[in-house]
Image (cartoon, rainbow over all chains, first blue to last red; front, top):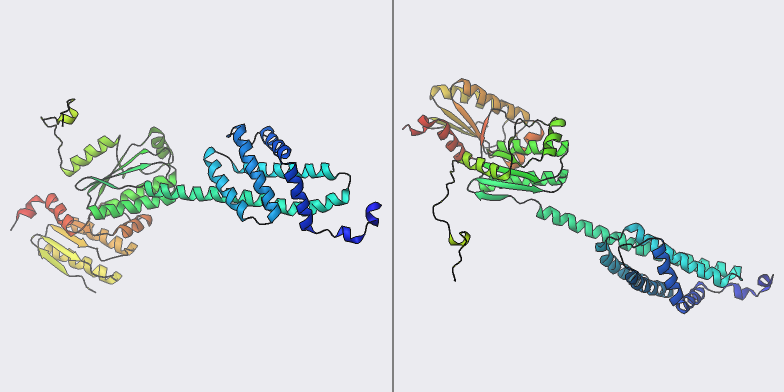
Length: 302
Length: 123
């Protein structure tokens, strides 16, 4: 009843003032709240990739940034911080659910301390929570989004790196190209491989191409058909294709899914493929009588 | 647009210089088949470098030309298919099976010389 009799002025304490009071409270209890939070993180088995000391150190700086964001109401600093944090912890294998989990834990820890402090004054507690909740949600949102964006940025970068690295078309002899394929072939990469190979054939005036797929772990029917199409398209440009390094698994899959390999010229390994290609081109490789010093086991002083 | 057919010793060379209608293609086929007999040619090269599209009718006609000329006792090579054209053809299921292909005119001539050693050496 006391509260209802209180003068109206008291009820209209501004949100800003409440947040100020809240920040004061968080500053004052910094040590124990931070410890409580770090303890809860360990308990919940979050951030298992990091040691307790690391968790505590990160917890401290997240806590301070959190309080600063509450105080100033601006999120730029927190955004930058969460991006830096993500940059540090993503390579450690920290998952999205862990980051969301720890931010929600902090929110929980702080809310509990507010409950404890204001349990006698229910109305005040309500008002403080009204001020706290939207800010806390925005902070949780900022940190989680920052993390996910950072992750996506890394994924994009890696995809680009893979794309650039993945498709060398190499000339090993006049008129002989090799195309070593390593890793997973998705439809986009398959298209790119074909394009580069066909351009390479034209640019190098290749007559024989060895496609080596030793480094390809698996192949589905879509990619297998694409490979067959690549072989046929190369033939239309006047080049013969030899496919080498089909693993037992891929060979079995191809037969099982009924890909027509009749048009494909296959040789067991890359060496065999190159030898066959040399034969087709009319080369004959003969061992020389003279073995250069570098590989005969001797080294000269110079 | 008619396609000029050049005689080069025992070979005939037909260079397609722009997109052809179906009718033009059939004219080319008739002319080539006739000329092979008239000049007693041993090899025929059809150069399609200038084409950036080879539709199914054109591809089928090229295949027919190659098969008919083989029956007339000569070899045919299609040369100059562009990379993009090649892949588009394959995706449409057109593979010119049993038709020889080569990168360009030079390669085509080299191929014929190899396939027909007697023709190459003749004056």
